[in-house]
Length: 143
Ligand SMILES: Cc1cc2nc3c(=O)[nH]c(=O)nc-3n(C[C@H](O)[C@H](O)[C@H](O)COP(=O)(O)OP(=O)(O)OC[C@H]3O[C@@H](n4cnc5c(N)ncnc54)[C@H](O)[C@@H]3O)c2cc1C
Image (cartoon, rainbow, N blue to C red):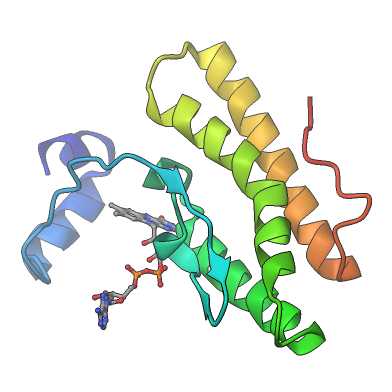
């Protein structure tokens, strides 16, 4: 509230008047991972299969995208949804590395800018792949 009062005094007064909605919960950090996410009769979506630091704010998108890709793979071939994981990993690895770099806080502002430009490129490519309904031609690296 002290910090907020410095930059946004009106907002700070408003929030102070309303009081907390619930007790604040701290996120103490958690190592990221990318797991094998399909097998015979099972599949993982969202954080269960692939978790990265929330600093790039992409986890909810990932969870929806995973569900979408898994549903599509299942519709194509209910007995083998392995394509779902291939499609996820096509984007997941670079997004994961960029996120790790940003979350490390081991950057200067110029490097952070470049990381965000590449992150933006990845997200655009991901969006394009949804539009055309296939991954072919998607460009991962904006560099
Ligand atoms: C501090 C923080 C900030 C974040 N900020 C953002 C953000 O700004 N933008 C963004 O996109 N993402 C953000 N994320 C990430 C995002 O919250 C997650 O990636 C997303 O919620 C994952 O969705 P999910 O459905 O895979 O998992 P979850 O949301 O974890 O849902 C899994 C659910 O399953 C339940 N469950 C677990 N085990 C069992 C069981 N055995 N039986 C029944 N139920 C069970 C859990 O209780 C939970 O409700 C943030 C994460 C954190 C920690």
